Length: 230
Image (tube, rainbow, N blue to C red; front, side, top):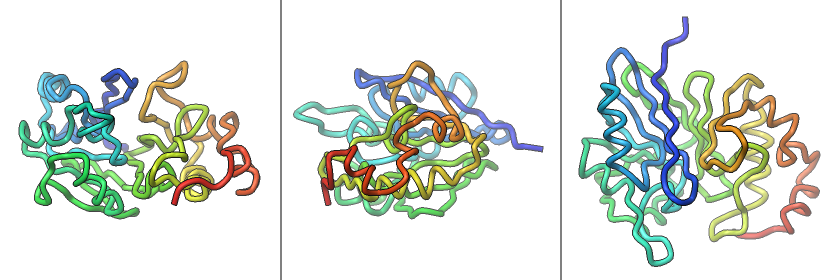
């Protein structure tokens, strides 16, 4: 029997970000994925559903997912969350230099992880998948048959690879070797509301998403405008 999962998708902020709450209905412990924009709403939603947030799982360091300084604007995020609830911030180790640059988080607030690591949220297991390309330490979270993909894989597209730290070759490998290898029935929950529906499946994306259909790296790079980034 599959373990039941508490799972909520919230759209917050002017950039159409999806923030997720996932938890264990037995222990009522929850994690938030990419807490940003409105920490009050995130905490209030969890508490009203009877859950306590103990972890902030971060897909990548960009401030619209983590909080911090973005083009002169300060976005509410992980720093405000850990001041509000006893949560640690789980982020891939390759993101750490960027985290310290854009947030006020201290080393003690952070838990550095690698691909293949797992974390327990109550009795619920979350697996970290390292999917570099959009950023060096981009990661997705696999919980049950659901994948929270951040800015790696969108419904019908993928994350940008023309930003500092992006790498289109890494993105191609992440899409075709890591995410496309998941079972077709895996539910896909992206980091932004950029489509006509809030979720998809890996199977549907393999059939319809051009970014998963390139037969080789050369064609992918040509579509992306050639090698960019580090």
